Structure formats: structure tokens, C-alpha cells
Amino acid sequence: MPRRSFDAPTVGKRKGTRRGSSLRPKASRVSGKVALPSERAERREARPPLRFDNVNMLKMFPPEHPDTPWLLRLMIIRDDIGFEMPGIFLPKEPTIDDFWKLSYFQRRVVNSLYEARHVFVKDVLPHLKHSRSRAVKARAIEIANVVKAIDEEADFLKPLRNAVGGHVEPKNARTNTHPDVESAVVNNLRLLSGTITIGCDEPYTTSFRSLSRHSLMFACPAVDDDEKLKALHDRLRRIVYEVGVDVAKVIDFLILRHAIAIGAVQAPKGFKMVTWDPNGRAVALAEE
Image 1 (cartoon, rainbow, N blue to C red):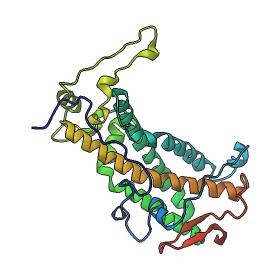
Image 2: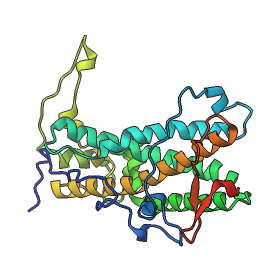
Image 3: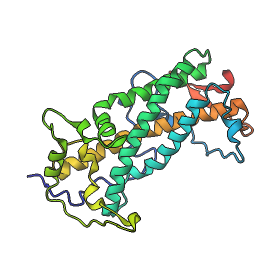
Image 4: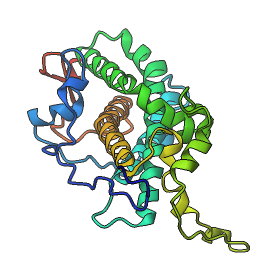
């Protein structure tokens, strides 16, 4: 008989995020011949991060440049993803607050991935479509595959975004078997108890986290025991890591390519910015 306590369920813990870990994206997730950026890590040495000091906002994103609107949006989304991704893992000895943070960051990063997808489809792919550059064409195929990877998980991710991600609207997760989401989730959590604090004149001290830590359930009312909740977190963590790393790398490429091309930053001596063609061959941006 499945446990229904939902009392600090044993959600999977982080086992490392190096490329050799089981969290590496699986080849089967990508259609066609193009591998996602994270899958290509095995083909080349990782390069250290590039740091540029005193980068000017106006020079980086000139208002008259046609790409500035979507590049600014991607810059904001990229920092959101970078902040949210570490939060999808639990420490070795998680507390109630850690479980709340897990649900929070998993909710938020799903929304960020969909925001990035929207910019890719609406702005980036049309922008790259007519380029004759081999490097740009290869990157466009790659972006299309990232979009497809998100779309392949839409049945799972969209309810999370629509019910507890971009908006807290549990009604968006209604199904024929669960027409009343709130009642179903409260019934599933009927044994959950904990301490709450209402700050009154010190509102920053308010916390309902002992009760709200399972917020993802309002997007998945069929989750009615600890094992299903663990499976929910594990599946979401895997998808978010697989897709999130690739979305982040694509955004990094687009912004760095723009910054170098427009002269907002100067690439280090000997630095070559490359992408990969459908056959896995490196294509330098110098070929654009």
C-alpha cells in the first residue's frame, strides 16, 4: 500500500552534474542528425568562461539594432535559468525549506524554458533562416532541435507552466478524472501537518512552507502518494537539466556572437567561436 503521508518524501538527491553523470541528455531525445550542445561535450575540451570588464549597455544593445529586443529578452531569461538550475537539486540532508525551494525552482525554471522557446520560435529562427553561413545554419538546426525537445515533453511541462509556473491557476490542470484540482490535492495531502508563521506587523517572517512545499501537486492532481511525488520531481529534474543546459548554451552563443560582431567585446587572441554542422564537424564563425 503506497504511503500517503507526504511527510518529507525522499525526493532523489543530487549525484553530481558532471558530463559523465546519468543526467546527461540521451541521444534518443534529439531527432535528426544534430546533437545538442551538451551531447557534444565529449567531442571537445571544455573551454574556460570568458570574462569581459566594463561592457557598456548602449554599445552591447544599441536601440537601433534590429536584434536588440530579442537579445535583451534572452539576456534576462539566461540569468533566470542560471539562477534557477542549481535549485532543482536537493542537498544530502534536505529540510522542509529545501523541499519548498525544490518545488519553487522547478516551477520557475519550466516557465523560463518556455519563455526561451517563445523567443527562439518567434524571433531567433526567422532571423537565422535566410543566412548563407554554414555556422549559422548549423546553429539554427540546433535551436530547432532544442525547441523540439521542449515540445516533446509538452504534455508533462505545459500543465506545470499553466497551473503553477507562469501563473498559479490550478484549474488549468483540470482533467476528466480530476475536474476539481484543489479538492483532489487537499484530499491527497490530508495527513500533512506542519508549523506556519503569520508575521502580522513583521510580514517578512510569514511562512506557509511546511504546507506549500508540495505545490507541484496542484499541476499533477493524480500524484497521490510519496512514490508518485518522488517520480514527479525526478522526471522534472531530468527534463529540466537535459533541456535547460542546452537552452543556456544556445543563448550564450547567440549573445556572444552578437557582442563580438558588433564590437561590444573583443574576443581573446586566438579564440575561435565555433558551432557544429549536422555531421558533427566544427564550423568556425570566421566562415560566415
